[in-house]
View (cartoon, helix red, strand yellow):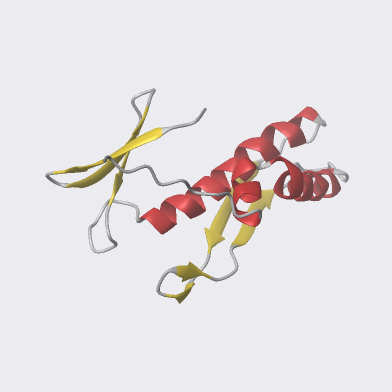
Length: 132
């Protein structure tokens, strides 16, 4: 089970996992913090990239550089439009199959292996538990 604890602090909001990692959050006006929507985009990008990288390397095509930009815009106050994942890669010199392998792995990861992508695509249910 994955879980994070989110709380208001004197300086804003903090999300903390069970391993002690923290991410500062805010509404978008504060410097040095993520908005919740940016964290959603980061989760999607992170899920894809941490799966694509080892699978590409395992197939013998370690990319020189692997980065991505994940973007979307609000089409309504509480609704995002399509999310675009744009990879930025540098292929190993002289490796003629690297691009083909990378593209195949990236598609397969996005379509089948990224839990965050699947949660967004399949509209995972959110259950709200409130104290009585």
